[in-house]
Structure formats: C-alpha cells, structure tokens
Image 1 (spheres, rainbow, N blue to C red):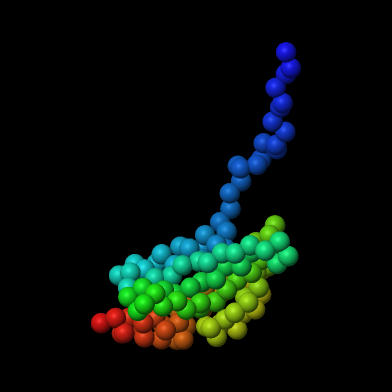
Image 2 (image 1 turned 90 degrees about the horizontal axis):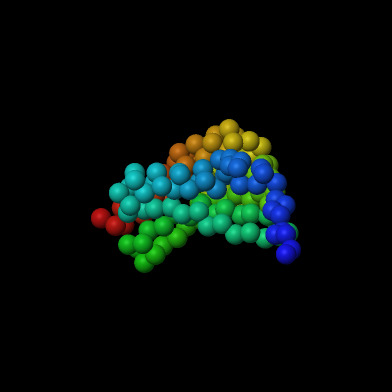
Length: 130
C-alpha cells in the first residue's frame, strides 16, 4: 500500500495575518455609511493585475441618485508587499503621492477623508436626497 502524500506547505502559511491597506479602507467605508445613515456609502473596488499589483479604488456611492458612483481616490501596491503605496488618483488635494507605512496611510486617510473637497462631495450628495 502506498503511503499518503505529505503536506509540504510551510507551517507559517495561513497563520500570520496583518492589517492590510484594503481592510483599513473597508473600515473607513463602513464609518461613512454609519455617519450618513447609509444615504451615502463607500466601497473599496479592488482589482489585481500581475504586472501592476493591486489597485484599491475608494468609491462614494449614492444609490438613491440612480446608483451614482464617484471614485474619491485609488491606491496601488505590489502584489507581494503592501508598502509603498502609490496614490494613483487624488480628488482630495492631500498632496501625498507615496505612502510607506500604516501610519502614513492613516495620516493620508485623515487628510483625504477630512478634506473640504471630500466633505463638499458627500454633503452635495446628501443634499440632493432630501
């Protein structure tokens, strides 16, 4: 009788989870829904490309306005490393183009999500729903 094929995967596979840029974005998206009573929500649109890694678009959504979508910004990082992150579009006037750590990502998000431009977009959407 032949012996079973052994499991050759490293013991570390599946045991080390880190906070990813995508999970941070998704948490912030959830906070917007709570803050606006889900009239304006946000989602994270993630795409993967073997050549360019991952792209995470942070998209504002107003379903009551015919499914209106507005990409506030997008972040791109390599497929194996979360940092550095490149800001590939920026409708927020944050001035940041490269992010090198989780702390810098949180600082970028604080600036981008708290900016006058972002506030104006969200409030304009909310005003149209009343």
